[in-house]
Image (cartoon, rainbow, N blue to C red; front, side, top):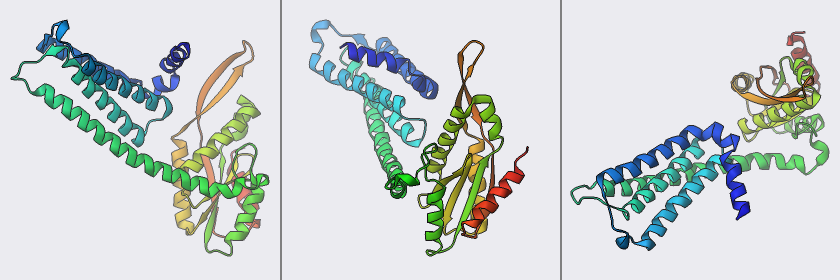
Length: 312
């Protein structure tokens, strides 16, 4: 029992839940309060002897479990389409079953049919929302599986993994370029972080490495399944884009950079004077260079172009 209460305390004080979903959860709590107030004001409290305990336990328990599932979704998932469908579905099921349970405590006049509509509508709406959530969750998992299949060939050979960014390294990139030359047209896109040396100086190399890894994983989640991402050196990344023209690759890289510009990445630093750990979120700005010449020598040329574009 103590483990259960400890888990609940961690859940209630979770910064993820409070930050990402607090307004939605507060809205659901407010709706539940209004529901109780509505039944109490319109209905008449039934005598204790007429309470049907099996119905109360069944309907109330279902509402409670739906609330727990809602909490689990909010605790473990960021905001997004799948999370929204699941959250609305569990919230509707919780409210619908709570209305069913309140029927056992309050007698609603026969002329009123809103309670039946409310109960049926919320439960049906909740099931529809959960069904949509399951569909889009399946699509999400299929996309993730594509990414994992794409990266599987890297992890079979640990020498091909960059230990900091946890993606393919430059050696693996050169192998893929050689292999792609025999498969068909493709483009190379090299990206780097503007002012990365300043971030390293301000936060330290450990935080710079963490940023390199965070950005790499972010790019993996936002690139197409057939593309390959590698770390070339320091804050330099290379995307190998099969089947794209130079114009298409440029548009692709620009969209990716625009998305990165709008995203905040977490960093932390220690103020040495008082040993206080400061948590910050930074926005990154990227340079990129592209080529449709699939040669290993082209990597040095792209690197030179980005170095010259970097403000000193």
